[in-house]
Structure formats: C-alpha cells, structure tokens
Image: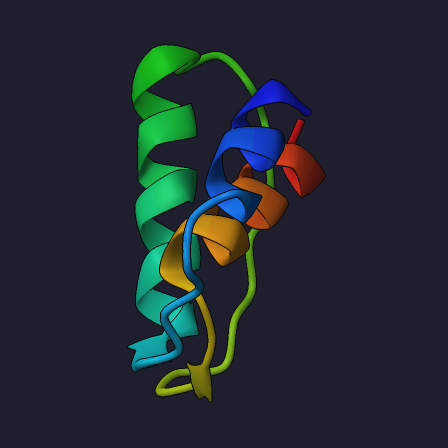
Length: 65
C-alpha cells in the first residue's frame, strides 16, 4: 500500500505497455527468489494496454503474492 500511495501522488503516464512481458518478468523474478515454489503461469502473448507501468506493476506483484 505504501508503494501505491507513493506512485499515485505523481502524475500518471499512460504509454502502451506489453502486459504479457511485464507479467512474465514478475513470474521469472518470483521463480528466482523462491525456486521451490510451484506455480503454473499461462498468458496470452502480445497483450498491450495503455496503462501506468508503475501502477500495473504493483497490481501484478500484489496479485502474485
């Protein structure tokens, strides 16, 4: 919540981002940090959205915990 509060105080930027790539990056980091954790991850390639990458990153990281 603290990360989210800090990010929402700044101006939002809404570029087109690759949501699939961002999610895969978070999953790779989780696998690196906890290699014994068993998680199945399925995504559709090439999902691109107009979004604030910092906010989306926080949301994806929180949903993976």
